[in-house]
Length: 326
Image (cartoon, rainbow, N blue to C red; front, side, top):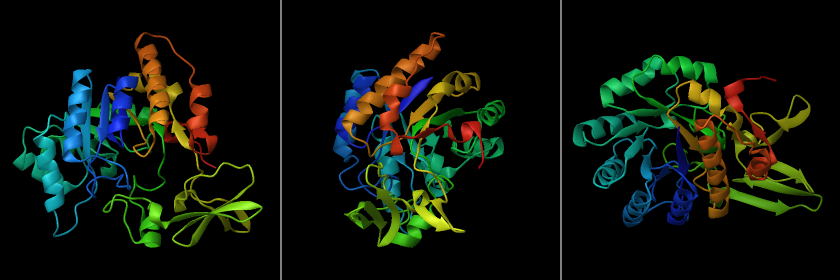
């Protein structure tokens, strides 16, 4: 299976490639990609340099243009599609129907992958995208069991890519009304969930308080690991009890499920985390390189001790791959 790894910066791209990534995905330094954080992402020149660096070492680069174009203002997104087509990137990752149509019409030779932001979660949807827009691979949303993925793969004509490590989203893959309502910026249009400029951490003596645009997200007692303040992972009072109402601050870790995902017909395994630093990238990519190689050879490796400190809140879950409900 292909190991697909994130790169939020040119340095992270080089780190991922050197650590054993088969493929690296990145985005431009603007609102066309869903990780539009200050200090991250690529200029066009940096993209070309990154593609060259990866190619020299046998790796591929995917470019995420995976936000939804603004009504009546699509020039930035169309330019991004054209820029990817004119680079040596292996493929573009798209979500917006209009941009999928534009790519099919204006850049018919460009290989297209369907972003998880499109939330295509059944065979009919996936086959529609493959037939109408020539999509070669779909990134499946993180709501499916391994058994459901296997059934989908038996009924579709394109490849599937699934997430195996990193952040989770309780919304329909980033379509977050909570963050939009609180900050005025939509993750799927502006490319930022909980913009850093809206985030504050304040020491209140007995606890650390995190807020987003003035709204208290969490209060951490001394010694408790603090998560990034997103509303979906906030700790609130509901029906007289205080807890994580929407989602616990944990990371997806499907390392133990790689043999099952291979049996289910998955083509590519995706690590989340374009906002992560080089040290994180080196450890995670190198670990999963070992795990994927072990599966290919019919053996296995235990990554728990290595990956546990790298998870959000130092906690992990298999997510919907093995659904349990509380």
